[in-house]
Image (cartoon, chains in turn green, yellow):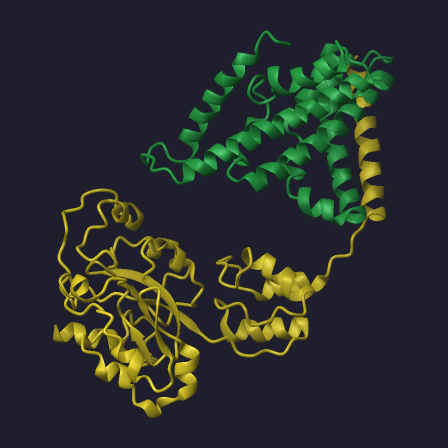
Length: 190
Length: 289
């Protein structure tokens, strides 16, 4: 599959939230305001890229040669968690503005299933490093897109008069379901 | 097989922890210890009365920005201001103590009910329903949205109206944004006079629904020698700075001349009992009525 195909497929057809149902916790938790949604999306793009790179190298040079494939899940968790911690410290020292923008989101996605899912799916699809990185970037962008759409809708919902039982999480879950249905329209294109 | 997996995970964990331990030294960022000290001096209620996002936000700002004064914490009062001033090396001008003034006296004016409300006991909900439960569209609804958000337990509902305990109120302003009708207004504790009405209507529109509501005759605006009273946003507004700096020599001409008796004395702050719920200035006309 060509790079462009991977890119489009990962953003729309296989959108990580709306088609793969990964990362639902930040999807609902960080989608109340557009600014917060953008910050979270940026942090996820950043971390998925790094995590894809490191887990790909880990798989290629450690797990595969020594036949440790059955430890993939647990080892990826350790690698990603350590990586995010490291990146957090690095950013705090080296790029304070970026830390101020992404800092509070980094601990939230330390062991997020969206990041973890991208790392594992890249291995399952058997992509090479470049394809894997494009896929990771596109998944991050897809996550940001879903989060931003949701935040926009929820900001509008704030000014609507909703029945008390529906306000807050219930209506957000219904919106998530409807958006997921809408994205089902892309199925079969990839 | 078991040993291999245990050993490989152990090795991975070891490598990761060594890298992180080294990184925490290499990338160590020296954080200002004064921020933490200021945090401890602040009350920690995160009320937001200082205008920052919680106590941590203010602590960061007051330490790092020389333009931020040390007396912003209204919940902590003078003691906290002095402590923060000592920690940050700033001179402290004492914060003007504020309290939330309820701009409504609907019981004095016998405001009638518009309908019998049986919905959710919330001012925000009742205010949406055909302009509120009372014929006055600017009155205190009395369901206590402000009571719920008050971090200091300074508000109570009596007889369908909120009453602010001025001894407990710190003037943080949390209730001001909770009130759907903007009845609560931050006022200096020292303020001598206050308008106990929030209506934006005029003349007959007011006198038809309330016996004491402000009809916008602007007599007070004309009589005030300090020019501290003005009509802003269709409400009588008293500039406390101008009023207090003019001093008592005007003998509260505005309150004496108010034909509706809604511009009243407000400066009799009870000093002794800490749990007095209502100010004397508000109680007097209520007992008469």
